[in-house]
Length: 125
Image (tube, rainbow, N blue to C red; front, side, top):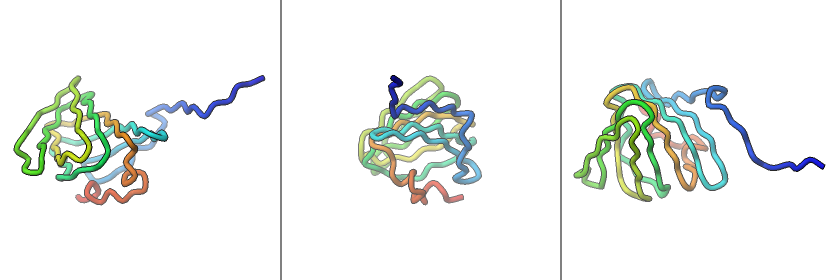
């Protein structure tokens, strides 16, 4: 008897990159309670000030991102290759790629605005 599961095996290289603007692309894998993404940012790419209910873990695989944290953006942190930033639920933040960057973002719960394409703040040129 064969045991069937709902597990999925995914290869990043088999997935098409979604082009959000001229400096930002992504790939997403979504489970029931968590989302895993590859984010590709060209040097100078800016992610505008925003916040979301989703807890976020950002792991910079290659490159560097500068983050401004808080509603007044008074705290800054640079996250470089091999480093991780944990962003709590509803913490306002923005970011800029200091160099071409690949980061892995984990969101819990999954970002519904990313799933349904209503993330207009990322799609601005």
